[in-house]
Amino acid sequence: MKTAIIAIVFIALAVLHQDTWNWDKGDLVFGFIPVGLAYHASYSIAAAIFWACVVKFAWPTRLEEWADGAD
Amino acid sequence: MTPILAAAEAAEAVSKVPLIVIVIYLGLLLGLALFSGRLFKGTSKDYFVASHSIGPFMLLMSVFGTTMTAFALVGSTGKAFQKGVGTYGLMASSSGLIHAACFFLIGIKVWSIAKRHGYVTQIQFFRNRFESNGLGYLLFPCLVLLVIPYLLIGVIGSYRVMGPATAGMFPELFPQTGPLDGSLPPWLIGLVICGVVLAYIFAGGSRAAAWANTFQTLVFMAMGVLAFYLISKALGGVAAASEQIYPGHLVRTPDTLDVATKPDPSVREIGIPPIQFLTYMFIPLSVGMFPHLFQHWLTAKSAKSFRLTVIAHPLCIMVVWVPCVLIGLWATGVFNTPPADTWPAPVVKIMGSADDAGVGKVLSVVVKFLIHNPLIAGMVTAGILAAIMSSLDSQFLCLGTIFTNDIVLHNKPKDKYTDKQIVLIARGFVIAIVLLTYILSLVLKNVQNVFDLAVWSFSGFAALTSLVFTALYWKGATKAGAYACVIAVAVSWFYFFAKAGWGGEYTVFSSEHRSDDGIMPVAICFVLGLVSMIAVSLFTKKPSDETIKKFFP
Image (tube, rainbow over all chains, first blue to last red; front, side):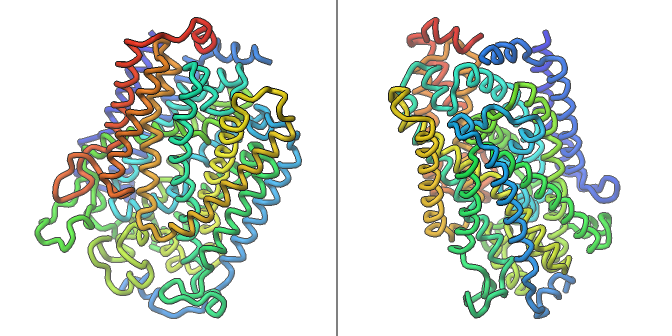
């Protein structure tokens, strides 16, 4: 279940990367960032939050213990 | 005439301060890295993978510094100047998602397996996973041949940065015709850059690389932000700077000017075509197969060390790329010209030409003529060199490691060489590779499309990521499937590389008006590799139970 949710969110993020609705927009957000750049900068933050959630909720603890068994 | 062009027209006395700053930076780097070399334990495990001792912060810095080449500062600014606002989405935000995915899905698992079974190179991993020595000999030339252009990008990139930065400083010692009169010659720049990197890699191996990368990454991140702040101030603030961006660069839609009026349709290619934007997402997969990154992963103290890297990597990319892309966009207004076709004479005077080599100078030129502070110009140049060198060291070391472990030591009895001898052999290979890179960089220093070569190198590695992914997650992936995957990727990559004229920009099924509005070759190479692996594995002998048990805990 956890894996399925992660995969769905990952695919959704990959689709959102295309942001076809911004393609022709040249407005400046906050008076200085072009909208296409502001969107993708926010996307970077969203990607970091997504991976933080993956690390929190789907960390491969068993794999880590197995690797440490080599010590 | 804009202020920057007026400044370029005025004959100002050339200051040697930027060079002094760069020399101080190189001295600090060398001192820090040689200090870390004193922590070297003298064992081969310490030389190759720092005895698995690198913690979360240094792992983040070394992995991020290694993935960001000269392209991070110089290329991002130049590409934004050339193509517009879509540059960030094309190269940076997708990398934030995909790189982190590779670290989480491939890096942690590879680290665990390699630590458990004592592997130090990718080829050792693949030889054991697919029960095939021959696969190692097939992969070896592929990996080496893909790393070499990547190495050359770094060294040639340093020539492109240091040449303009030192122009006019030594007119009697190094006379030349053109804008680079009196600049340091490439043979001297390469000698110093390669010499510094060699010194600390030779002394401390992986540990020295991790320390040096941490320092270099902090330097280039800070310098990118500093350049952004000072340039925006010089342009009257961020709002004023953005208001003068050339309108075509504010949107991603490709340039719609009448193609018939263009003197050379291949030159004026503002904007990002949608198909290229979509298929470019395959490029960041390259981090899954970079041999130098593989080696950095193995230096991690524990799997937990990866947590910070996975989460913070997209943010680090943002901190470096957003300011650089904005500087590139502002440059279109600063030069008061769309960056294509023909430039006005004053722009040509300071930039050289409208090709990739010219736009690669955007950051240096803007800093030099807009900030008017040789100290800052020196610091930003040092930042660019930091980005270059943080990739070079890892690549030199990884090639030395591969030659030593996968060629010299492979199939030899364990007691044939002492640990000291193994370190000595690795150091010998590192020296040979540095020498070869130095000579090749001097021979090929005038290659125009040096950044396009980077994309070809990344494409090869990205397409091969299908191999490592199936090796880790599909028990049914077989030796024959692995051969089919590597061969399919190598043949298709070579075919497209040749079609591109050995390294130029190329997309498949592009229109007659642009070279970039088709499918990125990497997408096709990746799919071919994956399909070959699956199709052949389904009908060939499965790996032994022992191997499955070893790789699928």
